[in-house]
Length: 166
Image (tube, rainbow, N blue to C red; front, top):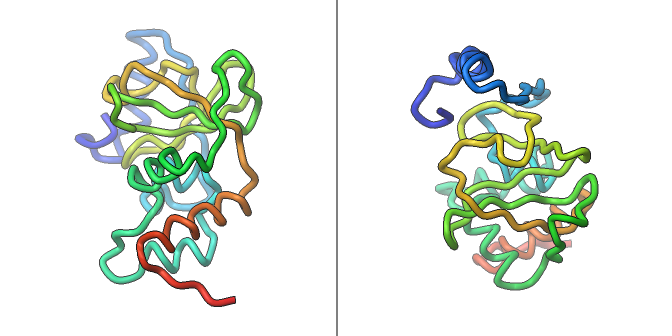
């Protein structure tokens, strides 16, 4: 749904699916245009951070908070994994298809997640109310404040050759 369908049709399709399947997905208004950020940009609090925006828009725009950023965090053990049973509000939930990272959202509490779906909208949904392409495996990680999210992105960008001056 999130890649093949025009954004203008997403809210209608969510309602069609609600009628058919009785889901609890809700669209969340975004103050920032949804076509300007990914699920990781949203979850790590990078949407309007000037350092992030500067790096992500530099050159060909190949250094941004996407799958490579997530793999970097995981490979360097820069975020702390927690069990799904002990998650708290503001923790992360990562979705995998096999070993392939597909999606990240933020735990709201009460079994609810806040996440940006592909090229689509920002949604409040239950853990498994996501597009099927996001996979069948979840892993949860302790949440961070947005300053720490920016710090982690800077560490990632530096690993890709960016230099930051104090």
